[in-house]
Image (cartoon, rainbow, N blue to C red; front, side):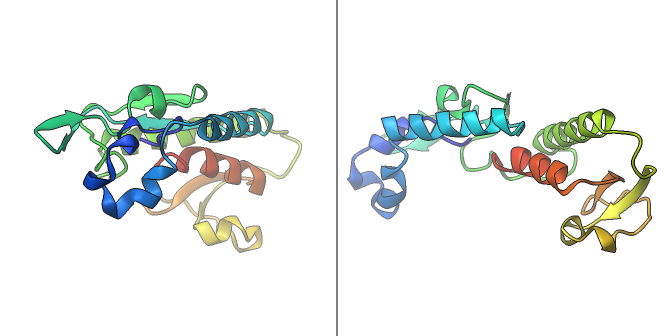
Length: 179
């Protein structure tokens, strides 16, 4: 998970983390991280950016036969958006989806689908007619290149048109930030 409010293990003496000292220094729980989290919370609420956070549940091995969560639940959940605690994930594999049947993939897919359903069901029906289309990430920024197609391929995003760049941008930003 993302240590929104810091990771207590960032306080471990430098002896055990010399390669990562520059990175972990910024991950210590601090007022700065708290302000950053609050600022993003405010922006996400004002801009209606949906957030999905995923938390690890399996401790990693540490020096001296110790085990602990790198990002504890209290820091993995930024106090807004949705949280999924992944039962079989540690800090090293929380963002590594193994296959399409992986619970992380399914949670993210459902999250994005729900956002798109909500956005399209609340949009005006007086605009262009709806159609199913295949869109690559490049085409999301170039609506004129859309192709009228139905796809089941996992490397493509099936969306309904009209596709607002803002809708897709918000959905993508909100869901991918935490992975």
